[in-house]
Image (cartoon, rainbow, N blue to C red; front, side, top):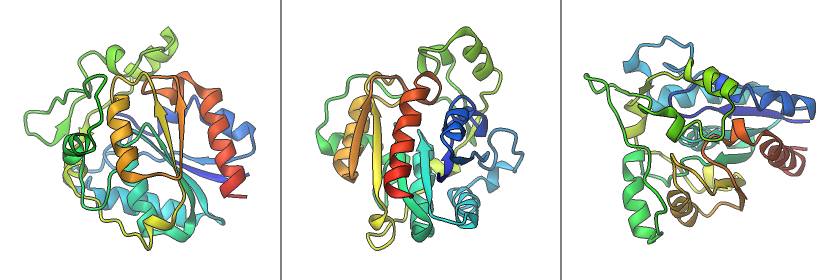
Length: 247
C-alpha cells in the first residue's frame, strides 16, 4: 500500500482522476487528487496561480504523508511533479509521468518545440493548438474536446468531462523549471508514453524521453486521456511502481 499524489493536467481538476482512483483504492493505495490553484473548483485569483504556488501546495501534501509517495503527473501535471520532487526529494519514492511534460532544468513549456527539434524526433501529429482568453491570462479548452481529449470516451464519460473542463491559468506555463541532479535527479522516474496521443503526440513524448532519460519507459496503446479510457492498464502500472519503489 502506498500514498499516491496525482496531479491533473490542463483544463481539468482533481476530478479527472475519478475513473482511476477506485481501482487504486481497491488495490490498497491512498490517493490524493488536489485541484491546483485556479483549476477545478479552486477560485484562487489568476495572478496567484504560479508554478511556485502549484509546487508549494502539492509539496505540502507530499510532505504530510507518513512515507515517501508515488508522485504522478498527467500532461501538464508533469511540470509540477518535477518541481515538487526537487523541493522534497526525500518524500518522493518515484515519479510517474503519464504522457506528461518532462522538461529539463531551465526549460519551460515554451521550449518544447526546440527540444523536439534538437532531439531530431519525427513528429507523428500536431500538438494541441493553443487558444487564449482576450486578456491572455488563460488558455482555453479546445473548441472540439472530442477530437483532442475525448477520443475513446463513452457517451457518459464525454458528458462528465465536457461539463467540467475549464480554462487554464498560463503563468506557470512560461516559468522555467529549476531542477538539480542532487535533488530531482536522484528520484526514480517512470515515463508512460501513449502511442495514439492527439494532444501530446508520441514524437513530442519521445523527444522529452530522449532528453530526460527516465529510468523506465512503458508504452500504452492509448490516446491522451488514458486515465479514463485505460484504467486497468494504468492502475496496474502504478501498482507495480508502488510495489517496487514505495514498499
